[in-house]
Image 1: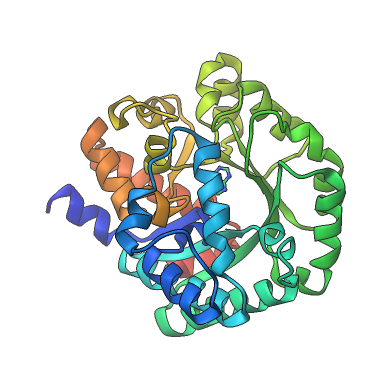
Image 2: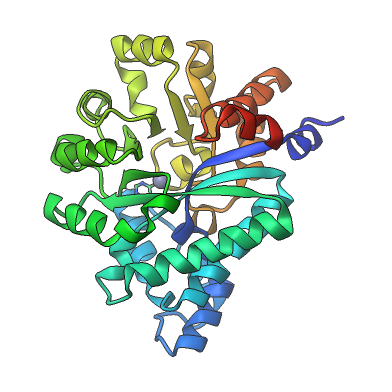
Length: 326
Ligand code: HPA
Ligand code: ZN
């Protein structure tokens, strides 16, 4: 069996997926029409042509603009279901998906519209596709602590159906320390905690995420590889890293996939998983991330198997639930 076929057949969990980043241009056009929202593109091809980024901020500007077509519960349901259908085709059995409520509430879309729509899509995906999922509420780190507290307050009626909190958006200039108190509060409320760290930001941000935010899982973590003591710490604690190869390539975190740090991370004993981040913008879903990285750096079948296993171990599924997914 070829490695590609082996990858396709492996059960996988996706742990780093922004649901707004799964908005394909075709659905963007459909929702723009349905909701009579103007978008600055003439065609699906023109949208795809605009996806040429030189850094994280370049991407974020377009990603937030694209999200403006999402207005109703039905829109969020359709967005989620489209992602789960695509993920199921890649044999993703479980997904822990991020959403950015502030991107929507700041446009006047109520928190409940976003949450109910996504939860309905998740329920249907479990029923129709057998893909289970959990929801992670991300705070936008370019906004302030007060806005994050306000968002957590708005989320209260849905917190029994939200697994945890995360931290995303523009990293440089917005260190984890800015969100220490909201993460402390989330921990007291029994929520899991994850954060993007070391995507563009320095290794110090990774240490802050560990020491000040007490994260259960780290999103990206690439720049940890610049700090020997940090590598050893991450290996010793078996902290799960949700690495996103095609995202790293599109956002110029790596110049070439051949330079990707995953082989070195695995060699150093880090608990690495592969994920698609914002697949509609970065040109590939789960299996594309595995295949293209495997091709570029020469992953072995054992390494691929290890990362797929890590994805279930690093998930927030309980032991029993986990066994049922594999
Ligand atoms: N990094 C930070 N924020 C994000 C990303 C990302 O890769 N995707 C969506 N929001
Ligand atoms: Zn991300």
